[in-house]
Length: 81
Image: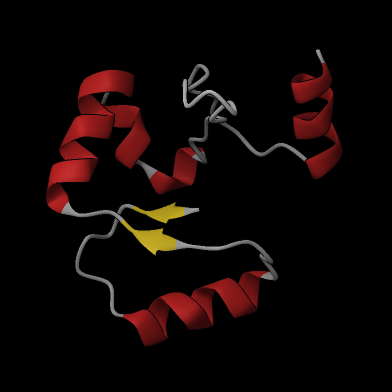
């Protein structure tokens, strides 16, 4: 996951990850990275309540921006086509 709160400290992010039960790596976007993501996907990418997410393929290409909660099974289904 990528936090779009560019000034969040590691302890706060770690607490959030623990409290939500997420078990994958998280990073904090730099302002430049956030701007680049917004340029590619639109401002929705920076709106955490809309649960924006996209999948990066093994070749490095990014899929379309999806909003809303998806279960792991739904994401796996999208990956499998």
